[in-house]
Length: 129
Image (cartoon, rainbow, N blue to C red; front, side):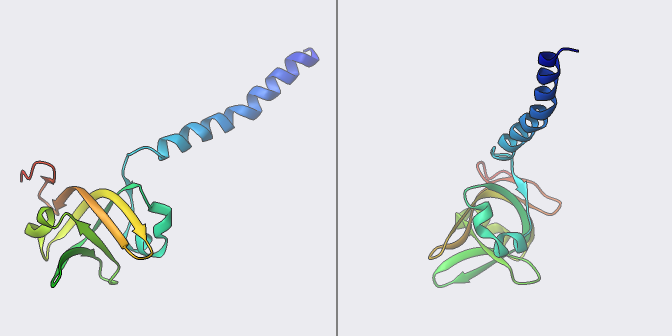
């Protein structure tokens, strides 16, 4: 095998894994929801800022001012928006998919795209049960 053939083979073997890593990295940046826990969102919110995530917890609320959040048994919380989409799920365990955002002043928020009570499916865009 000539030197140029060996060099070409070496480059293919060296760069092929890097190419696959880049492709997989781009796929991870897509809008495919990342399945995360509320604990993960609470402990490292910056890692998920701007990403579409799916998480699970119980819908809770406060009346003044009216707002809703998702909470786990360890009291990790994420605010849920818009409230009218999640109001029917108060005190229920749900699976929620939406775009997560985090800001020091705003806190942790999830803009709901889909919400599903455990055992029942609902699409937030249509409101169909």
